[in-house]
Length: 81
Image (tube, rainbow, N blue to C red; front, side, top):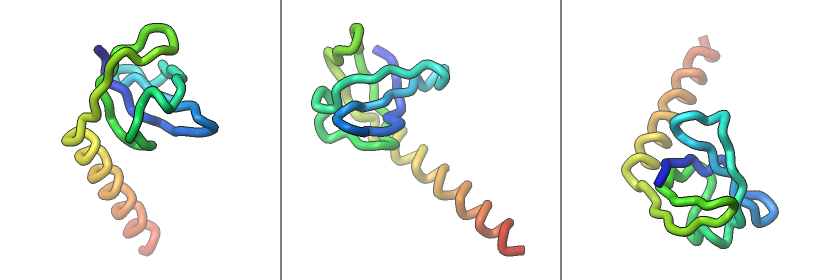
């Protein structure tokens, strides 16, 4: 199993980025990942374009979203000066 970030979900297709090398992406039918949304971090087994198993990594997802919020706040403060 590998760890992916759900980059986007558009037109029924989920675009996943491999966490260890985000230049590698895969595209799978979003219906194979019920309850998953953009920004989620998942651990999944993918064969071809088929997800055979997955789980959402709640703690990693929450940490990544908190980090992104912090960066945005820093940028906003920097731009206000």
